[in-house]
Length: 397
Image 1 (cartoon, one colour):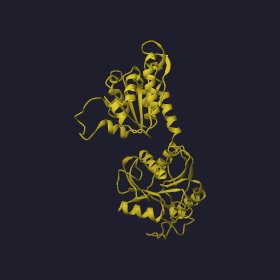
Image 2: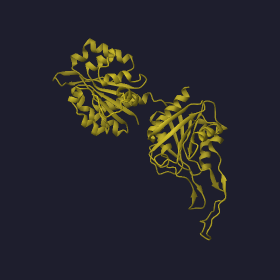
Image 3: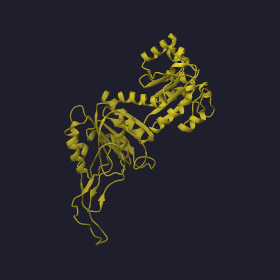
Image 4: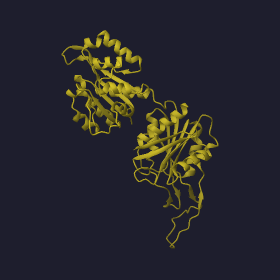
């Protein structure tokens, strides 16, 4: 899931932008749109706001926003991907010369050059082939801008020639294909554990916890989207996924599977909520209600991360999770050190709006180099992406 910012300049092809927005939204992305003054004459803000469920940004001054909000900076920072479509000859010229005389071009200049940026030129054939436009396109291409070239066809002026903006479906696929080719986790083997483990009492009863597996599954699926070779090891869960899942039941089951697989991975992310204790003597038959009390003797399960740390090889990155009800940061940092982890992700399980069985989470990520990153409340897919990017940043040093 990505934040897609679409900048629309004033060309007739602007009427196709609602379709492009819908393609990204259907793929699970969040979309915001900037309209230039002329673009708003071709496609209405209301149409795009209805589709994206976000405000459309125009070249005007609003009195109902905080004076601390600086729109072109905020939008540039929010976006993971910036697409300018259609990109008119005028807008391309401004980009080439660094002119920031409207919200769209100001946002372009504020947008970090290391993030993906795509433009979709659309104009009359003569304008497109004019040496000035050719030079301008070459300039911005040399700066890392991805150009989705126009095609031949009947233009708005009734001429037939090159200059027609690519169809929304082609733009969508071109963006996704380009991103896939440069995924940040490309070539890395990642193991993710998810869900609860359960410890049998008898054939029908067991001890477990409230974990749904949503955070672990979100991390596994996002790692796959980011190019990793993913192995998902899951305790009992009702979640659906397109990934191949190795199902386990108990803490010991999970440990045994991990011992077989961990040597081959680059990154291990232990998002599973593993039971700390198990029943010492599991009954082969259902325990009857013969008395008012049932006494169970619980014994400690092996600490999976501690055990695996004994066979951790050079270059592997181990990431743990700390679900805490008190002293969140102190307990997380202690676990980081005790279990020989590279990173640990901490969250507050007392909050009812995040964590167990919620679609949302808020976490703090610590690493053994002393770094601390707070990721504010958001959907678990977004949290997953930010955690994985933090892991890659750690690997890159």
